[in-house]
Image (cartoon, rainbow, N blue to C red; front, side, top):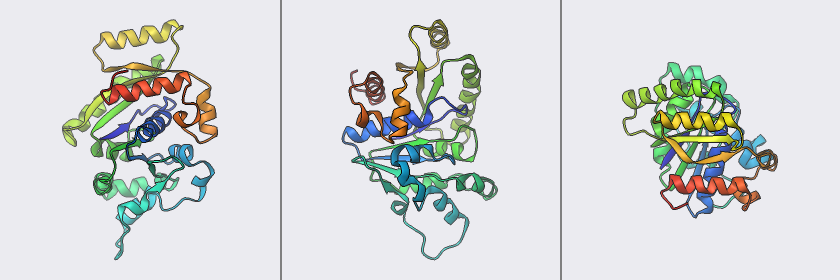
Length: 257
């Protein structure tokens, strides 16, 4: 299963959700790969900390290779790196992705991500983190994925952006990937006691949108998790937010909560 975590709005928790679901998958015994497609490389930093600073080759190097002729191309596995967490591997990003995007678009390399993931068939689960924009990289991810998870931050700006996002994903389904499934909308930074988040979520459910049952709370523990470069299941396995992530993972994989 290949899941892309996508929202063209920033600050909604894409990286946090991608990395923590991937870590839970690995903790559950699955060989898991996290793919970082964001030039900011936040997922790479999250899983590797300071080790990310000198890491190579990255997915940017893979894309560079697709733009040039080489007699001895690297294998797909050579771009994959181990993380400190058992069964969790990383296809890392770096800032060069930002400089490459226009060349990749002009050469129509839109299916190259799918090509490399097709070669990485030794993984039970692949999670793809994307930049906060609808661009070459997010379209590549949607083409390569089996399903799409959409993080939703509980405010009116996020709601307005959500409708356009769903339209874009449906366009990708029609034009590029008819097997792509909108697996669900993940309610993130949810505050149970606040009226606005409860009202927004209720209205989205009433509209028939695919809201997942598990909501993720707002918690400062996420900042500590980022700072220590350690996903929640490895840092604080019994924390409330960790348990919510476990419930979300189980919901997505058809297990009882």
